[in-house]
Amino acid sequence: MKNVRSDDHRTHQPQVELHDGLLVPSFETAERWDHIVAALEASEHDPPETPDAVEPELLAAVHTPPYLAFLSEAFQQWEAAGHSTPMIPASFAPRPTDSPEPADIAGRLGYFAFAAETSITDGTWPAVRASAAVARTGQKLVSAGEPSVFALCRPPGHHAGPDRFGGYCFVNNAAVAAQGFLDDGADQVAVLDVDVHHGNGTQEIFYDRDDVMVASIHADPQHCFPWFWGHPHEQGRGVGDGYTINRPLLPGTRFAEWFSTLQDLGRTILKAGTDALVVSLGVDTYAGDPLGPFELHTPDFAAFGRFIGGLGLPTLYCMEGGYAIEAIGTNTVAVLDGHEDAAQ
Ligand code: SP5
Ligand code: ZN
Image (cartoon, rainbow, N blue to C red):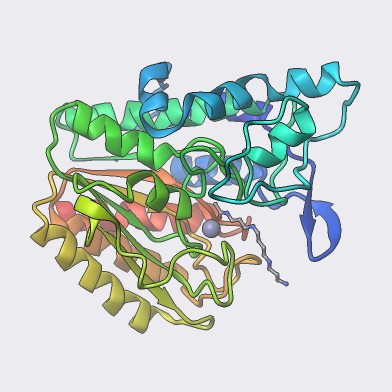
């Protein structure tokens, strides 16, 4: 399977995150990307494709212009205010809000954030743009006839909503790809989100729409981040009613139950007349993951990939989470190899 990746992710170097009341070393690191690349290279995957820049208009189709302006200039405004520390939001706007966007950078930071574990640093914005470009380039390859492509996005994207960052995500790469499929001729797209955390950002971006189905299987938000989204009653709104599907499962869930739920989502996606599939591929469902309470093992990832390959849909995988650093590459490549086995 072709893969798309960019070294430009490396400028995003979050040092610390707020975790259980302490600033600890970031879980989301450049090293995650290195381990995935090492596993790709060890298993004879195609040499990488490098991305073309992502069109600003496409970013603006899934995010608001004020939010994109904030991301692009945040760290410079922070420095101009005399800071050199990472930007960590500490105050949050109610939603909905009638408040205008604050002028002060600390206020802007909270206005466009929903969680405090994610920091913005000097090189965040170029890395975020490169990550979206990786997704867009992968999507264009699939739209041009490549049966399946892996977009090695970093930072991840599925928690990023129209105008909020959090959960290590800034621009929603999967949403960029889904919108890109539509722009390039698809009528009906599905995003299948298998990261252990609910993809609240993707859900919010497409909540009112019937051209992108968003289906997510994740740890029950009663027990797991992002806490406030991902319940079964969240089903979409207006013409989008029925096009958001949430299947939360309890902490401790093992492969058998996870997979039967997933098969159900796969059938629903096929029935919707899907032309192209975006898989938000988090491997933080792994039993050894420090941030996910599910109990999947490496062979389970291969079985998952075989199932997706068997759906026979043009498929783009976008990398999301996965924090068991020693296993992230093996598990990710197990999915891709499983897919190729089934698709042949
Ligand atoms: C893309 C992605 O996987 N983002 C995940 C972001 C998770 N951030 C917050 C995690 C909070 C975990 N708290 C667990 C407490 C265990 N003692
Ligand atoms: Zn996750």
